[in-house]
Length: 431
Image (cartoon, rainbow, N blue to C red):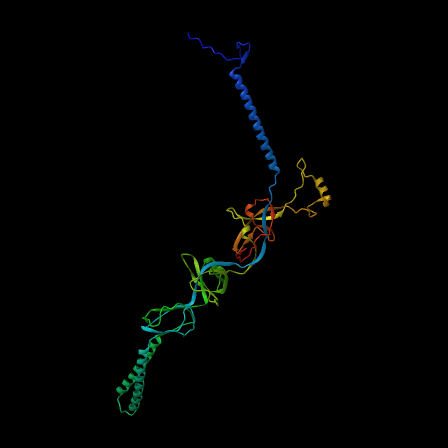
């Protein structure tokens, strides 16, 4: 039979070193117990220290007040608002054409300068007509002879000396000679190219001595004062836009200038592909700075002006769930409460009974300002302002810059020293 192995534990033993000194040897279990106890004490001490720090921070956070946020403010204004319909249009000349030659000839005279203003009937280009002039003189002489022969034939016919056939032949020769003169005069006139209307000439495409053929372009002629602005608006604009309403035209070439005009034509049909209506406005262009082919920003008056509230566009916080602005109000002091949660009426009455000791009422301290978020419904934007259709009553003080840093009920500090002014026609300022 197998016998179970006997186990022994190492306990403290005393033995003699031989020199009369006894040494006590402790077991390993005792050493581990002492080390574990010391480690536990250290862990408990560190945990307690960390707990005390966290508890202290929590208590300090409950009583900590964040500093006010610096913002600029503006007042909700009520202004007269003219509804406008914006569009992008193209400038076109009232009358415009490219003059060209009708007959073959050699250029003998150029009667205009590049880019100059020309009058109706002014000679633009004169072609060589020496051969036609000589033929015209011969035709005029034939016309005179034929006229005399006709007169003589009429006299002889009354005397019944000649026949009716001879009289008819004389009449035919007279008509033929006069037609020849008219034809040669027309050929000469076609070789003298004149301006068909008043306008501004472009860059000429011919030179002296050049031989031109029928259809050869000579110069572009455009009437630019006044000028047309053609644009398109959605079909809904037909309810508010009518002939005779004013328009304002601006171009990127001259950003600081604008031109006024009136709607003179509304196309009677709607484009079936875009559902837009083509319109035309006549714009005065006395200085001639507007040229055909330019893109133009057109604003059409749509209806009568009305009173509306406006706020700076920088004051609006845009969000998917709704647009909002922050109002600036004075923080209302809450009445003190006792331990049972009820207001301490006696202390509040006592405070009211001693107004002289209140620093706020004595002007020693400014009232604390807080931001309050209000949702609004916006309309059209113009310049630095945007319409506030609902949510505001007018006269409120709102945050114009710095609203993105705020939350509802947060303390604010107003500093309008460096606030840029909001205008309907903003212009960059170099500071």
